[in-house]
Image (cartoon, rainbow, N blue to C red):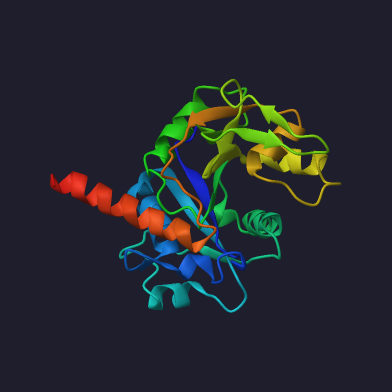
Length: 241
């Protein structure tokens, strides 16, 4: 198995719940999207190319001018216009990959730019996990659900989170051929919650991978405040404070 993969970064959401275009919201003085691009750069040997979904009017050059791109970024990404939903943006990225042989790879990571603090070591580790399991079609990072979970569909009931419930995170890794086949099988549907769900609905196997509670998806302004605290704590720990 190749130890390299394409990396799709989805950064086209409108940010209605946040009240701003989230990839350009500042985290520790840098746009949110900068942090994921930085983590991709840290594992350059494992990444064959980068595809970025952006809203209309946004270009790679505009990101560079805004300080959202780390210095000496190793790739000239394929920039794709995002759709009205996350899934439409993903389909646009996959179409660009099919039409551009120079960015083809057997394996693809898909990540939401609104999750800035994922560990970059996940890239080679997730690739290694899939390499050891040829019967699997994907890898998804999961974390235990910490709160008590209720179902309120007609009658309220409590779900046993301890036994089987996990929260899904990104980046998720897929075998591109299997993922393309799964999309064809699930084509009557128009939306999905994540890449793992597409594979699951097609009867394909997805490997669980240990996630990270700090891999918070920015949805509301309070989430940015929590991430600022995580960054300060991380810097203090490295400095021996």
